Amino acid sequence: MTQHQRLLIIDFGSQVTQLIARRLRELNVYCEIHPYNKVDDAFLKSFAPQAVILSGGPDSVTRAGSPRAPEALWSFGVPVLGICYGQQTMMQQLGGLVEHGHGTAEFGRAFVTPTAENLSILDGWFADGKEQVWMSHGDHVSKIAPGFQVYGTSPNAPFAVTADPTRHFYAVQFHPEVHHTPKGAKLYENFVRLAGFTGDWTMDAYREQAIAAIRAQVGDKKVICALSGGVDSSVTAILIHEAIGDQLTCVFVDHGLLRLGEAEQVVAMFRDNYNLNLIHADESELFLGKLEGVSDPERKRKIIGGLFIDVFQKYANGIAGAEFLAQGTLYPDVIESVSFSGGPSVTIKSHHNVGGLPEKMGLKLVEPLRELFKDEVRALGRELGLPASFIGRHPFPGPGLAIRCPGEITTEKLDILRQADAVYIDQIRKHGLYDEIWQAFAAILPMKTVGVMGDGRTYDYAVGLRAVTSVDGMTADTYPFSHDFLGETMTRIINEVKGVNRVFYDITSKPPGTIELE
Image (cartoon, rainbow, N blue to C red; front, side, top):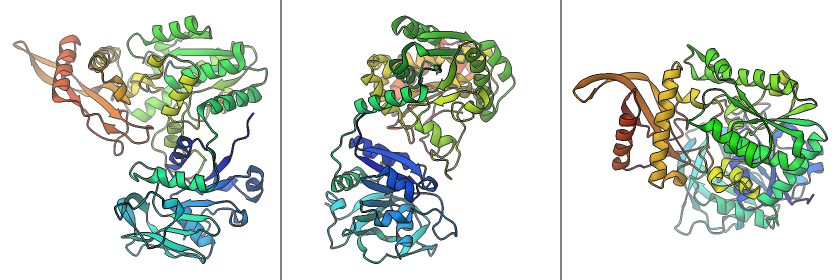
């Protein structure tokens, strides 16, 4: 297997650490994220990175015992870039000073202006005299370390950009990895180029690497794959099948919470077109029975997650030699459940397919997509030859329609929801908008409203429609449908779906909301 040029990202627990990796992947640079508490001097020597990036994080370098970079890094002889917390620990460790408070916190958009000095990592910046950046810091650098100079300032960060070019140490207080720093990608490009990276990592290379890793992990043992029919689990299944062939058995659990006609489509595609070993497990009665009377979304997720474990255990027991469980877990699933590195980032919501399974099932996990975002998974799917129509499908949550049915779940509500969702997606496709949208779906709201149909009074359910644009699922904006489209869609849903008399469109972005309407 080809040994790529390697960049090390030391993770201090930021929610957006993986976005750094995304920017590097877009530059075809191979990188790995490792938690700060696992990167000691010995690891650094063994990994032998060509450059190092220090991520942001929620802690304060002013706190005794707070995270630090390994001391060997400062004499390792490779370029180092510190981001936010990474800048602050770099300054503190090299003889500068970081302080808390004093009115210098910055959160959100800010503007950095240059000093008189030029700096290679800022090539392409400051054409108009200042650049927008995204700040998120309470502490601030009050004294730069010896050997460093200031190359950029903001209103509340007098040391917004500092560097010691002689040692190739660079540090910024803002987050270049987020979209709200428009020229952040250029900064990363400048950094990896001065570090000597040629850009030798591609999705083809990732495929090769992933297949080799799967074969090394699994050996001659059997793998059971949790196939949902979504892009993530499907790419996982095809990738593992390419690696180990008939050692793979896919279990498709029909939990009664799928979209209209979805079960039939999944079975036909994988059993007939890809000749995979596929078990169609219709467990809808089990799932719906356990969910009866449950309205709290987190309890729904926990129940569904627990039942998935039970179901897979049952089917795994019937597969001789099955020692591994394959899942299509992606990085956004991981980061919203717990820090990717096991670090201190905050839990937003749990995901049924993250953690706990090996211990409860007695199976070891195979998660070849764990470090990828959705768009990267689609690129890998294209590399594996999956049809474009399938790769472009909108994301669908593991818990299915359970989290698109706020409040208590009933068979009646699920039937209404399936039909309303099908009409909505049909509308989007008819208007040629499907590929412009990251995710679109209907949700049945926990309310009934009074309506008038014909000359009669109705008292039926309200349906909420959601459609967002996104790059990676970490942030999202509402899709700007025209009023004509929304009016036409409302009319079709109410006319075609019995039990609905009102339609809402959700215009909430992420943040402050999540993409799912739960």
